[in-house]
Image (cartoon, rainbow, N blue to C red):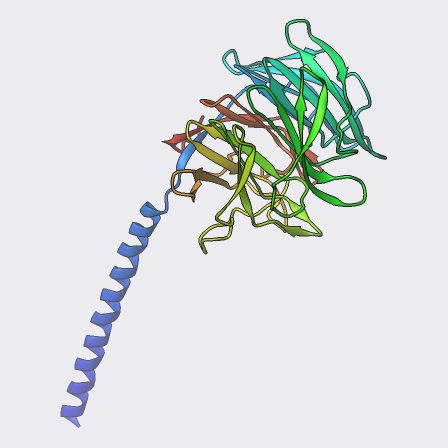
Length: 339
């Protein structure tokens, strides 16, 4: 009996030692994983928008000035327009958008002028378009969007042309694209986009390439990802946004922007509510990396200003809460919650 008791005590002691070693391993490896998983990127508070909090506004950037207007504040559709000085960090009100109040319109720039139009006025999708001259603070009508009425579309530009495509026409999600020539004031339909129909997608530009992805159609967030070469006007498919099991990029009503040679997708609705997550795209590898989440309230229907070297996210909504905050992103800095 004594021998059996001694053996039992020895086995129990060995078991305790083994459990202790396992606990040490879990603690140390857990700390190591936390260090490895620390995300890079820092968001810095900037000047809060002076006007009414809103979502689904039109925005575009010319040099160091971001322009924003229209949108929905939870009660009313809006037509006021504003500019944000990226260097001076202040907002100024401009001439109102010249026609119906609206949300979910689009904007782009050509040769130092802004172009804005389409959207939804609360009853109908719209197709009207206007040119904004920053030097005179005036709006002028241009040819209506030739693709018909549209909301939730995307827009971007090359050096000399503007492009609008996808969106919802009131009956159907779309996948067509149209090119605007400011010299002739004409829209021309383009061919060659092989992606899925969608609304509420994002684009971002890096050099002469424009990248398009995310969005929703028939209740499903879209997974495909595309690049458009503005010099050849050819679309090419890239790896799907769910190509890697670690990716959680798929969403709708997000914002896209670029800094240097990297592109970003941020915020939006990931399928069961708004998100604050941010993903960085490397066009050289066709791979994505998660970055520090947007430090404000989770949101969708926000806007972005970016000029190639600086990028900001502002406004949007979280459920029925409409927002007016504004933050700048520094992708190479470590997170600092106090700035």
